[in-house]
Length: 276
Image: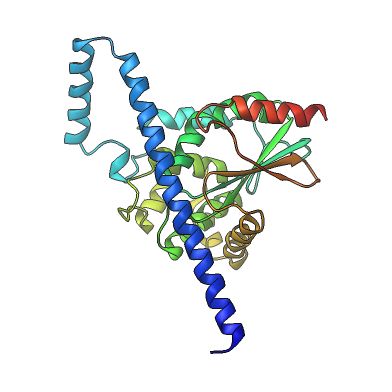
């Protein structure tokens, strides 16, 4: 084998090792989030009566096939989160993968994998506060970018991320992304089938499904997913969610918040950049 071939093989092995290491770190983060969630639930318990009610509700959900783990999106209009997502995003400009005023002075790049449970926690807990305080006010724009971590199959990862970018052609990427995270299934169960992806799209209000399906075949979108991965690699990002932040138009720096479920660390970083 030539020295070039050996070098390429070593580079590929190194990338694989980094992905596996990042996967292990993400698993540890998921366990920490789960432990934190358990503590919060215990603090919120109101006694035996409430516990019985909760158990009854869970039993009904299981019996009817409900819940996030099923990986089967519910029909439009049947989920309270439809209204939640619409309320969060209503009136905020979207342009492709960008949420917020294109001229916002600060940019936050959010690298995610739609099957990543920790991305789900961030998107459902910390992100809404960031959007409400900074994006809605015009001081911050958020760019969603793709980085494969949780999704095992490269083709599945590309299919779901391209589907999000295709929704972005209609300025609906963030609606698609947030719906996917709300509906996210159990990791490593293979739930993200073509039927599942189309089910997510059907829940996005106002999305032209015919145009969306057509856009999914555009090579430029697949190239964008690949480009995002290269950008993440260049920035030394190997886990999700991962962030780059800085003044718009300038160099962005890696940002590692102290919490992914609260917006405080993000607020401090954004405020400092807004005032700079």
